[in-house]
Image (cartoon, rainbow over all chains, first blue to last red):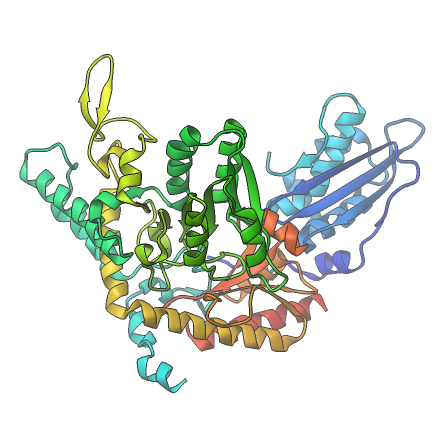
Length: 139
Length: 415
């Protein structure tokens, strides 16, 4: 059995130690929070859309938790800028694993997908397609 | 130390009885420090169970045939042996086999709590309860209108005894307390709490999941009314746990689960219940697991529970000392001593507990990280999660050193 030794490669550690887009937006189009009870990770994602109400213009995240969840949020915040809401909603677990560029052990995948799930739930709530107060990866 | 050396466990011999400890991951020998979650299983236990399946397997209590009689005797004798192990002089009548400690807790809460609790009654717990008891009593209290109170812990991770005396009053119906905290390692003064509960005509239930595996436990010396523990944390198999109860209290209780094997007489209109402990063990019980637990109890007693406690305490003290010397490791629970068990909860300041556990895994060091089923306690400690190293009879000081080395590499990675 292989150990998860590659999980903490430079990119993840870099984004954990120097998170991009960390903070809150003053004028988000939508904003949502979620948690991963397994690690106690908490993430808030703020998203501002352009005038077309489709293109993601700015993303910010805040919260705290393990390196995997925080690095994933930082990477996602960079990745999402310029994408459309439809493209965000089309993302899945494999896209996150590709984005992170490392194998995530099965026990930690919930940490990795938290930010994506929070952003997606936020978008669906904004579109009136979902009612939820808080996202949790224990669904 | 000299006495310890004279009585020290022959760890090398013991390790030879646990083949799983020979496993290697990418060339690194397994360092198993997650014993508070589950202990490994010695050959004698595995053999007892496989011999049972090879030679004796049958259902219990109802067969006339020879195999069923033999299986029934094995199963019944396991009750007596485990009862004896924890000092229950009533034997099988005071020792119910369940699935695990959690089911033992639920059995009591449903069978006794639903019937006896009502508005104005108080259930007194502690801030260091496992979810097994905390959630169970919380839900039964909500259904019955009773109230839960929580005895505070002090900043050094001990029960606040003054607050215990404030919480346990004539309104208290039952005190439910963990014997050894699975997160802090605190050994609680359960006999004192039992006396306090009884002074107020309250009952006391003790969660002994982290105590029975590693120290001599005498339920009668504690004067516990009910006491629960699990097989898989004491070198036994999964799938079996125990609930001890004083005979007159168990006799008075109605069953929790219904079915075959627990009845005396059934008509289309009504049923009457069988004798203790069978009225609490409906359906086909964990027979092979009972055989395994019997073997585990024999095995542990062969080593000696006092020596097991000393071995664990000495490893925990060494781990505490080494981690404390690191300077950036926060340690939870009391300092090493008689009221501290063989587990060490901690956090490395710069690394989240789950990242730490993942990096430890890269070094083949198995520890626990998370909330350890004590979320309210973690809220009280002000952390989302913690790491935990827990020791057993086969662990060594060298493995503590491996733990510290793995922590060093995590620190360097995140520096």
